[in-house]
Length: 75
Image (cartoon, rainbow, N blue to C red):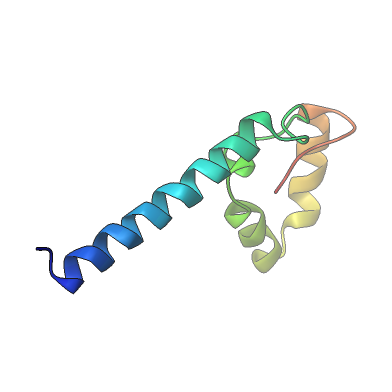
């Protein structure tokens, strides 16, 4: 018989795997998957949020448009 801690651990691990699989499915097969942009920004908005906090978003956005075209996926 498993202890309650072990069952909660397995439940938490299953939830983590479920969330990771959802993120991967949305990043590669979702409706926005064909829009170009940095690969890291398909999974999280952390990098873009750091540019907003640092105040250099206005310098980063033109670089992204120049590299990827008229439409860029940033989050």
